[in-house]
Image (cartoon, rainbow, N blue to C red; front, side):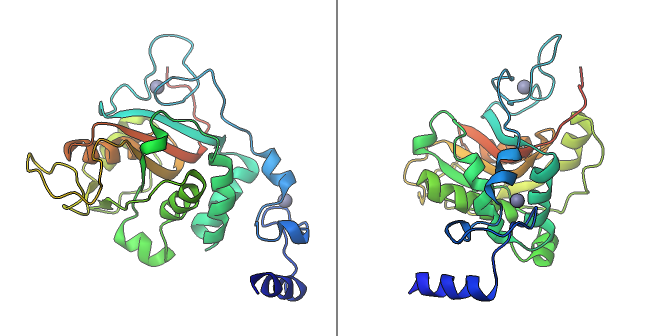
Length: 252
Ligand SMILES: [Zn+2]
Ligand SMILES: [Zn+2]
């Protein structure tokens, strides 16, 4: 029956690529982005800083991840945020196309992280106001789409204490200050240590790594702050994945 329904839907509403408006073949009609647009997304590749995944500076140590909490071991992104990749994120965040999360997750699927096979995926939360406006958290949609591919569970452990200002300041330091204290643990009973008090575990193995999921990595400040909240609660290993990575000026 789903097949019949999809066939009818396609007759009534021929599916087209959200980005270039080419009609999609029937076999591709469950996607929102055509294969050509998808192949135009430029993958982030090494050489990179082993920790933050940013191309390494020509001189000296990586400045981007120097102030990160110790628990945040590695962050990786699928593609550079330019052209069609930026349009796809825009569709997910501002055009109400939550379903495009599956297209984005297909680009994130091949990201390799240590301890991935035992990890939990934790979406970076939105503030209450933005969540009301958008109707969904784009990072949660990405996390759920990725979780289906990786066959890992999703746990919405974090909440955003306050809506942070749009991060227009470009330096890593300014961004860190902007998001300081923005996150806290949503569920006390999640198997992580809360202020030295051992609590009953909903996460069966608290030693499992936590993988933060977000749509875009700009300077990593948001991920670092979310990791800090998890670290305070006793999480020993936090990793992070994003779909896009902003092309930044060299801070060195
Ligand atoms: Zn297209
Ligand atoms: Zn780095």
